Length: 49
Figure 1 (tube, rainbow, N blue to C red):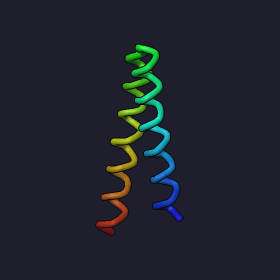
Figure 2 (tube, rainbow, N blue to C red):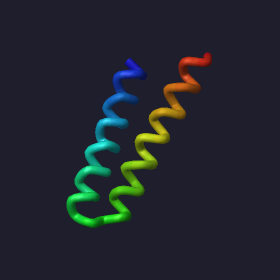
Figure 3 (cartoon, rainbow, N blue to C red):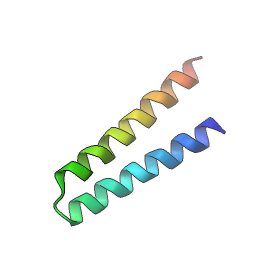
Figure 4 (cartoon, rainbow, N blue to C red):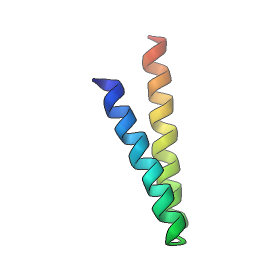
């Protein structure tokens, strides 16, 4: 279940980067990148446990 939530967060981050690029919004792209990186870090930490 936790991985499913992490995949949804990563997908939301990718969508935010895409929409931010279309709208020339660097803040939205940064938030999207942080969401993706946070989801990846959390997935790796969960997998290592």
